[in-house]
Image 1 (spheres, rainbow, N blue to C red):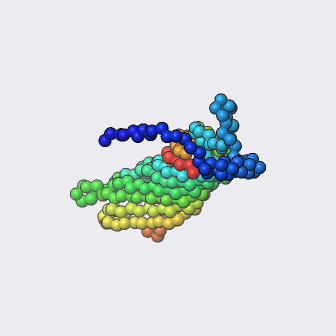
Image 2: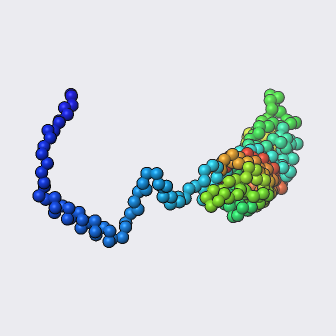
Image 3: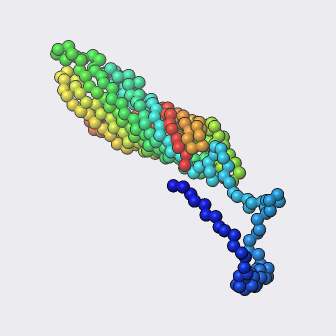
Length: 282
């Protein structure tokens, strides 16, 4: 499609009879505008300096927590539990069965929720779970076919704890009014207490020491026990919101055994644990 340009022929000019009326209306409008207060600022002419724009509040760029320090954090952790194993039930197992004191070492999983009180103090609530089930056999007895007499021992622990954590250095610093930058490394110490659910059981074949017969059985005992702990560790910041946590903790607890274990003292649930965790600040 082609464009066609319309060319107008010259026409003689003539006076518009309405022009005087329009001119009078325009003059009246100009007079009223000059008497009224100005509602807008005229745009600067070309070459004149521009009027400064009103200041705008901007958030600083770069690493930092917007609007102040974090209020808390959430940690998912994993590690290894090393029970102290000093009560007589462990000694009996070590003497009669092929179980050493290190047979109860167990993987551990847990989570912590920390609430920031101030720059140096946190309140921490935690949950952990560990389980181990070493197999064993009697050291001095075999069955009539000279086969080992085997059994399994299982120990589970799940402490619920609350404690206080003291940071040995400042956890971070504020930048202006809109950002907070964490310290790279924050060591800490702390302590607390709580309650530990535990479960100890043995199942398999056993020897009756009175008549030296072999029988199959399942011995079970469980309960709740008060606990206390001390800890130390450090936080390693990866970003303003994420960090890596390293912690060592020693706990004390003991549980009363069921009647199936008559003659034994309370089971020792104390031990040392080391964990590594991934944490998220909020």
